Length: 376
Image (cartoon, rainbow, N blue to C red; front, side):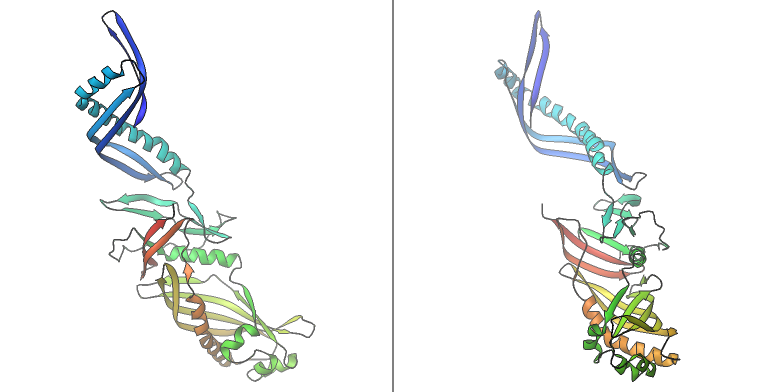
């Protein structure tokens, strides 16, 4: 420690007024402090110290300089080392409490509790209730609500489920449960923004289903396609009619979705003529694992139920349409798994990394245990 000192005292008829600097080395410092962790009205964490605080210094060596009487003061310090040590120790608790009250809480009051997940979607990590503490851990309860970055107050029609207690026993630095509420608010915001709408053509499917999607090949199943010309390519548009919904159990993750699959015939002039609109209800069941700190997914089952919303190729037997769609879905399943098994990096703040990650499915959520590192 380094600092400045000053004294002003009277000896008989003489007044002594001195100042200078000091250096002090301390070892064996023991600090015991109780703190209360809470939250403010905006969901940011707060820290307040209690009256329970004690500090001791095992050994201390202090020297003063900068005064003509420094040699005398140093002699007095050596003879009164216990008193000096106790004086310094008595200042530790007030100093630490003051730092917590002024500096730590100043940082926490300005803490950003919203974190960007994508360019259009953020998540609210503000505390939903005060943290709880134990001898070796602190448990934090966050809102976990995803929202459009440009419209934080948008109503999200998703109900939060009660999360279970932690199921995994581990010594990881961080354990968390990402509830279905987080997943479903994310899916909803992405759906509202149109992120789940997409186009694809025959080139995207030919390698997976074994044939090209043209009016000629489709006419073999559905003769009405022949009315749109010979060997014209097809394009497809997928539009979810409602937000996908995820449901996690202790066994797996299930996602249900309802969407329209609109088939267009590409005319010779490049224009698109809508030929068929099929409404599909799909259910995907699978699981989530982690490899090298990255997410991987594996779909074990994919089922579909189809109905015809509109058709310009004539009346279609619902059973036939359902059979064709389900057959194509099963052919696409390996390719869907190839995409879902692509390593997806866990979203982390800049400079942070994870290691030794485990994921477990629990009722209404994913339980994740991980150690975290920081490049700094």
